[in-house]
Amino acid sequence: MSKQHHRGQAEGPSQRQLRVAEEVRHALSAVFTREEFRDPDLHGVHVTVTEVRASPDLKHMTAFVSALGKDLTKEQLAALKRVSPFLRREVAHAVRLKFAPDLHFQPDTALNYAMHINEVMHRPEVQRDLAPKKDGEE
View 1 (cartoon, rainbow, N blue to C red):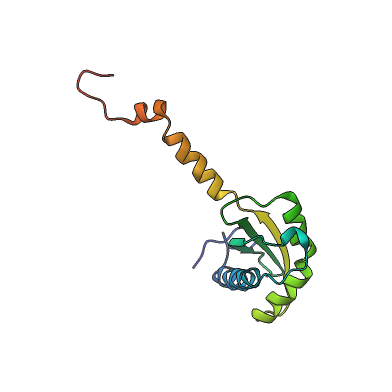
View 2: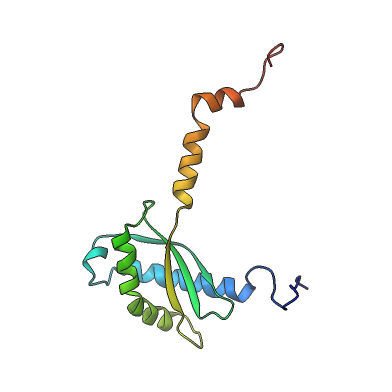
């Protein structure tokens, strides 16, 4: 039995939310692979959907996207918003749901953050602090 808040909502996403979000991620990835957009800001852009999060009622899906490890530009994110009605129809055909979910797009910054942390960890002053101490050193 999962822990409940005082309002009756479970902590974190349900199994159904996780399963549906993953199905939507696969459906969006398939559409992006086919590159069926007429929008010039998305021409030649390889959009990667790294994660999808579903609202509790499954009517809203937030897709975290990048362009093959790079951040999408503001223009490309605006283009995704423009083509979202098309993407919504494609998702509705691919995933069996009572309602076609509204799609929202957010840039996925996890890779950039990981690369930044890696860079910091390899700086000489950090490496010096991480090196094992020899006897007599403080």
